[in-house]
Image 1 (cartoon, rainbow, N blue to C red):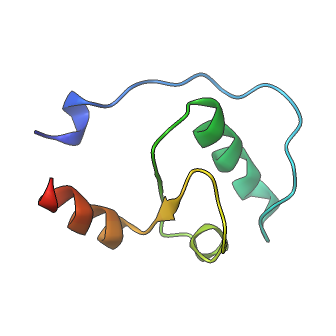
Image 2 (cartoon, rainbow, N blue to C red):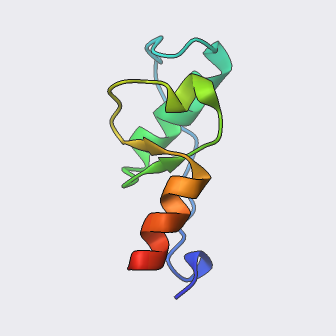
Length: 71
């Protein structure tokens, strides 16, 4: 099963974002992931992957690919 077979479109999030990352431009990604209720946010951006606690969890592409191949 490929990712495209389970992918879904999500609308842009509405509302105020809370500053949680070092890079303000990344706040949009967290807000989008939360509003879309994703299981995991995949990113190679260290400003995101270095977050100690995040909902949803953030995985690097390598981490995600490793876990995906086990499914």
